[in-house]
Every structure is written in C-alpha cells, then in structure tokens.
Image (cartoon, rainbow, N blue to C red):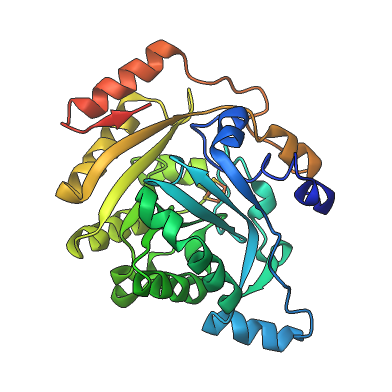
Length: 300
Ligand code: SF4
C-alpha cells in the first residue's frame, strides 16, 4: 500500500485485509477507520537501537490497523496487521506484509494508548484487539506486551496466526490470548510445504498448547481448487481439528479469490495462482460436509 493510499480517507482500508472470506466491498463496509494514522515513528533510533527495541517489544513494525466488526473475532475489534512473515503461501493476499522492514515502527506505548482509547467500545460490543499480519507471531515481545496491557484493562485478545512460529511463544505469553484464529493451511507435511514453503507440525503444536491452556480456537482453512481441496487433504485438516478438542469453537472455510493478484504484480513477484479459479458452490458444500461429519460447526 502506498502512503498516498493510506492517507486518503476513501481508500485507506482497501488493501489491509488478508482475509479470504471477505470481499473488499464487504470489508470496507465493516471497517470504521484505520490506516497508520496516529502513530509517531521512532525516527531517531539507529539500526542497533531498533533491533534492541524490537527484541524487547518497545517497538513493533506495523503494516496497518483498522477498526472493524465481525471480521477478526467477536464484536467490534481493532485489528493490527504486523509486518513480516516467514511463510510464502501461494494464495497470499498480502505479499506487501512479508518483509518486516517495510512496516512502520510503532512505539509500544502508542499502541497501548490506542487500545485504551477504544476500551469502552470493545467492552460494550464484546470486541477487543486482534493481532494479524503478515505473521503476528514474528514479533512476540511487542504483541504479548500489548496483550498483557489489554488484559489488565479487561479487553478481549485475539491472535490471528499460522502458528508456524510456535517456538517464539512462551506459555506465559499464551496466557494472555483469549482466542486464536489458527490457519491450518493443509493437513499433511507435503501439501503444507507445497502451499506455504513451511512446516505443518508447529501449527499442530501451537493449537495443542492453546487447548491445554484453556484457550479458544477458530480454525481457518483456505479452500483452493486443486491445491488444498482434495478429500484426503480436507480429511487430514479435520483430523488435526479433532486434536484441539473442546478448544475448537468452529471452522471457517475461506474460499480462494483473486483480490490479492494486483499486489503480486505491483511487487513483481511471480504469482503461482495467476489463472486459479475460486471454488464452485458444489466444492464448498462438499468440504463443509466433510468437516461437519466430524461434528464441527462450519462457516463458509
Ligand atoms: S501466512 Fe501466508 S497468507 Fe499469511 S501473510 Fe504469510 S504468506 Fe501471506
């Protein structure tokens, strides 16, 4: 997203979402405000200080933020899209979040103040703060310190993640997560690697840790015909969901769409799904039924 887009009142929300289930129009309708306004950048810090501040969580690199309803968890929420992601999903809608250095450094205090400002709104709507990305677990110190402050204010916390960086999170950090939107991108290592370039096991491990600590999970599964759609792959994802037991509240099937394609072009990154179509209604129904057969509540 260019700065001029971010600063323009009518365009500032257009490209912030990574969510596959919302069309941009729907998302805009549900988005109240956002961009990167209101955050002062710590311009004075040199590179070494920035790395140190990143490690301690005194600053975080942020792509954008917004206030939305019914998109990233319950109620009205502030969603913060963090910069940086170690995966390279073929269907990524936001390749512009991949590099942490492309984000804007934001002070921890400024982020906490922003949460405090909307505290009453969150509490009256049953909402809260959601960290998304990019990969929200790439900056664990910053995210977990904001969550700690949010919990102290009585604000609901939600982490939207692939779980790939499970090792970055301590049990103490997990303590401050109320809900996790966990992307289970495929059901076996081979397919997962093909889809993302990464490993599946950390996602399973993270989900198990969340469950063990009594946290809630909404699993998200992106349905791409021919890539993630085989009966076997869906079955394997459903079996992973079973491992999470009562922690799992529902499964979201996110139908693939092409809204992210212009970003790949803009960044001149070869886009592997150039001519990929979204799933037909029949395929959505089949996959929904597969998950339901395991006893899950499923939304498409
Ligand atoms: S996890 Fe995948 S979809 Fe999400 S930002 Fe990273 S590459 Fe994109």
